[in-house]
Image 1: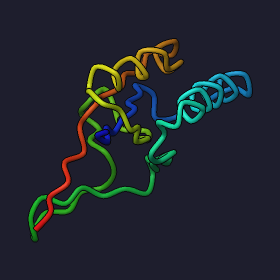
Image 2: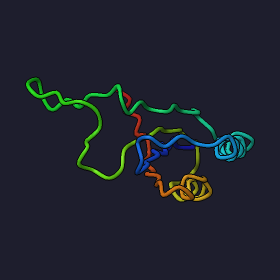
Image 3: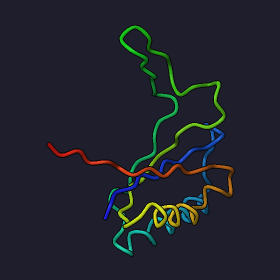
Image 4: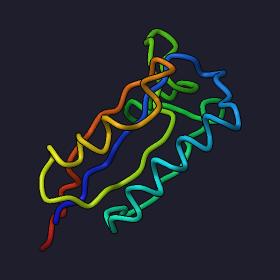
Length: 111
């Protein structure tokens, strides 16, 4: 099994999910957990309390304002292949509100 991080992106930094949308997301997450493939339930990431560091001399506030999407959170799933992780991503309700999900393998470097 490999770990894959699902990175959630939204277009609206002020989006507040309704209770029904939260429940739908929790049901999606519970479905992955029920298959024992949830490695880390992840977290929601702050939009307002964020900095971008570009070397030792340049630190800017928050996520890039010039881009249309920002990272809103992540989870880590444990699957055999990236295609299986993508299948989990496809069923996430974020697409109903115009969001997207980036799927990346977590590479573990051992000495």
